[in-house]
Amino acid sequence: MAKKDAAKRAAKKHLKEKKRQKKLDARPPKRVQEDPVDAWRPVVEGIEGLAHRLDVGSHDAAHLAELVATHGRRAEATKTWLPSRVRALTDDEILVGLATRGIVTDKPSFVALAEAREGARDLAIEVWKPSMHDDASPHDRDFVAEAAVTLWERWAPDHLSDETLHDLLRTGFDHSEDGRLPDALETLCTVWDRARGNGGLARIARADGRGEHFAAELVTLLDGPEGATDAQIERGLATLREVRAELPADAETYVPSLLAEARTLEALGRPEEGIRALLAVAPGLPMEPDLLGEATEIYGVWSDAPAELGEELRAVLTTVRDAAEGPVREVYDNDLGRLEELLAKRASAS
Image (cartoon, rainbow, N blue to C red; front, side, top):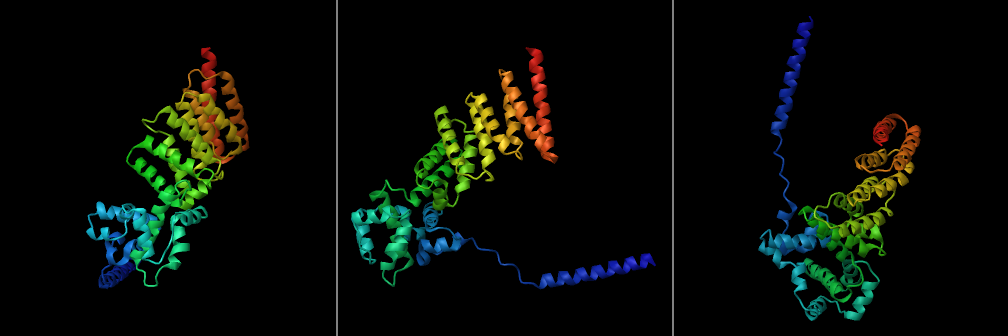
C-alpha cells in the first residue's frame, strides 16, 4: 500500500509540474531592461533628462554626459551644455547667454549670492530659474546650471562650493581606482583641508552623498599606499584622526580607522605609539577584540619591544577579557595566551 501511495504522489507531483511549466511557457518573454544611458536622448532631454533617468544629481549627470560625448562617441551628446562647452565661453558670452534666458547678473551680485549658499546649482535653482522664460527648454535649464558652476569657479573660488568638493572627491576616487594611491591620498587630504571648517564630513556627504565612504577610502589608502612618501603618510594620518573625531563610535569605519592608524605608525617606525593608541581606546570598546589583537600583533613582531609595555598590554587584555563573555571572551583568551608566550620567550632570552 505504501508503495502505491508513493507512486500516486509522484504522479500527482509530475502533473502539477507539467501544468506549472505550461503556464510559464505561456507567459510573454521578459523585457530586457534597457541601459538608461543608452536610452537617453540628449537632443530632446538634455542633461537634466539623463539625471532623471539615472536618479542622480545634475552635476553627476553633467560629468557622465561629458564621458558619453567623448568616450561613448555619441555625437548628439555634444549638443547638450556639457561642462567643457560652457567653460570654453568667456564671461561676457556666459552673461549674454543668461540674459537671453531671462537672467541678468554681474560679478558683485553673483559673488554676494554665492557667499550666502553652499552650491552653484542651488543658486541656479533658487535664484535664477524662477526668472527664466516660461518656455525654457531642458537645454536652457542645463545652460543656466552649468553657467552658475563656471562663474562660481571664476568669480568666487575662495568660497567652497558643493561642486568643487564633489569634483575633488571624484578625482580622488578615480586615482584610487586607477591604482595611483599616493595621488589619491593627497587628493582626499586636500578634500578634507577644504571641508574642515566648512561642515566637515556632513559637508562632504552633502556635496557627494559619500561621507562615510570618504572615511572608508581614506582608511584603505592609509593602510597600504605603495609609493607614498613619509610626508604624505603623515598628512594622511593627521587627516584620518580629524575625520574619525567626527564619526560616531558605532560607525562602520570607526574601528578600521583605529587599526589603520596603529599599522601606519608601525610602518613609520613608531610601534610603541601604535600600541599605545590602541591601549588608549580598547577598554572603551570591549566588544572590539581586534584592537588589542592588533596591539599584540605589533608587539610580537617588534624585536626590541620593552617588557614594561608588554606587561601593560597584558594588564589591559586581562581586564577587558574578564569583563567579556562568549565568543568575544574566547578571542581575548587567544590573544592573551599568545602574549603570555611572547613574554615568556623574551624573559627566558634575556
